[in-house]
Image 1: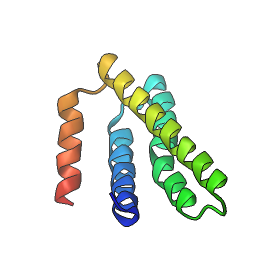
Image 2 (image 1 turned 135 degrees about the vertical axis):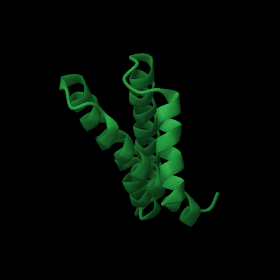
Image 3 (image 1 turned 60 degrees about the vertical axis):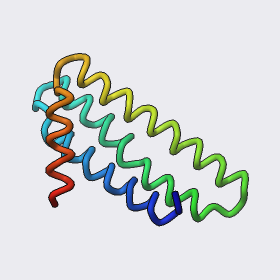
Image 4 (image 1 turned 180 degrees about the vertical axis):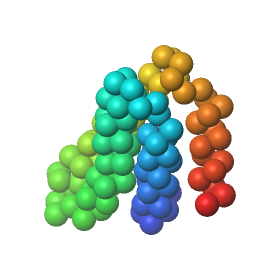
Length: 102
């Protein structure tokens, strides 16, 4: 996958994450998870872009590690939402389909 395509896909992921967060219940659990998911899920693309602008190989590797960590954390929060029955896999797929139509 080339750099521009990955930038596009990480931005699309951020948009989907924003939509998931907007669909969460407005209770304490929803608010706490929303903040964590929003931060982790939207930072993947931002950190990828930063890695593309890295001044050195070491800097680039460090930023890619951050991308990997944020992606793993995003997956954790999504798994938690499903396993705690706050959202269903079907509802996440519906949000994804809506994003594709936009």
